[in-house]
Amino acid sequence: MRIRPTSTRGGQSPAATSAESPATLSGLDARRLPASPRRRRPDLAALAALLILGGTAATITLILNGSARVSAIRITQHVTAGQQLSRAGMEEVRIADTGIDYLPWAQHVSYAQRLARVTLLPGTLLTTQMTAMASEELIPGKARVGLALKPGQSPAELQRGQRVQVISLPGQDTGDHNSTVLARSALVDSVSEPGTRGASRLVNVIVDAALSPRIAAYASNGQIVLAYLPATH
Image: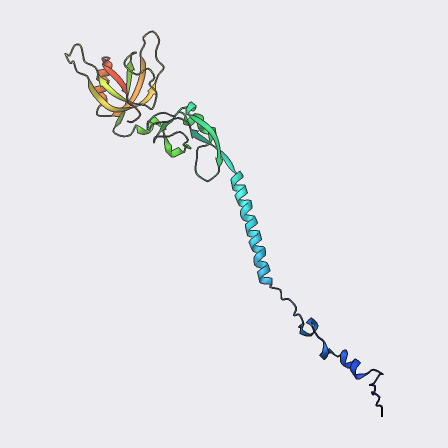
């Protein structure tokens, strides 16, 4: 007796229904899980944006600071403390504006008339604290003495701001045959132009007030010689 397979509802066989059932799926389709939606972190995004903005601002600041430059005075010649600065020993240089009170190049003419308060080496950027007026040494206890000196009684290249020894010469009438150092380190405050045809020139020196009467007495008799002190003094 032949038994016919019964058909299911809709005319399909159980095998066909079983083949299309989800329970019989194989491979990756059977093991694939539903994907969960990706969560966004607004706090991390905001932090990243702040870091980018901060880095951009820092870069702009560095560029602006690097481009801000000022004109300053740079020393090109060795100047010993107490010596006068010179226009020839200065040059203009452009430097970054760091807030330090470097003297502007526009004032180089007036500062060429000042004295070096400290020893200045080539390459030094000049500041106000490095200079002084000759009159700043004229304090209580000091005196300015004027000397009328003939050629040979002072160095030919004597300049304002230099240091000199004030020496007395032997007197022909006094019988004194020895020279004496009256002032070991006197500051030259001013020097007039050398006279012509043997004329004297006036040199003002600043010395201790106690020495000024004696120096003035020797100077009136023409018994004064100035000796230039080297830079080490």
